[in-house]
Image 1 (cartoon, helix red, strand yellow):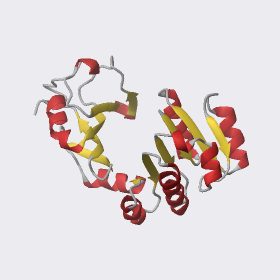
Image 2 (spheres, one colour):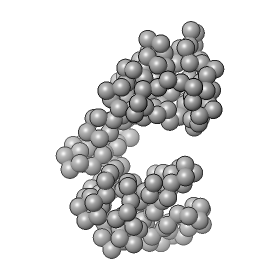
Image 3 (cartoon, rainbow, N blue to C red):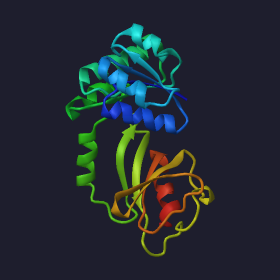
Length: 222
């Protein structure tokens, strides 16, 4: 998959590095010359780094947005993220546009324009408000107008039906992918087919909202 990211700061560069490590192609647009030099030096060779403004069609064209499957704008400016995503959708027909939203009051504007808005403030507030018990589903991010979500389910510490089993052996519902596991001492484990689940794991999954309950049953037995 080819992904174009606008903004090479901490969020954008981390996202680029993660996508590259997962085997995807990445193009990155950044307008600060000193950050561009740093990105070129630090990112793997197959990353395409463009020095320019991601709100400008010429630089999006240079980055190959026309062939991208995903465009993500991760600058610290909501206005820039909105303009860049709209440009990618309208001028280049990118199938999915995602944006970092710094002010959660702006989320409804992005969503109304068909841009998937991700606000760290909203995520944190949900995590505080949703004091989930073991086995409960905690929604971290809602995507695609509420049809898909990134959720968290904590595995029980006793009578765990999936513990000590490899992820590839699990009978998971369709449209459900286990992404990561948070363990004791906040250790984060990337999930692979041979990853073994352990009692008390906090499982982060990408799922269709309609299959959340089925995923919970598959992981917790209830």
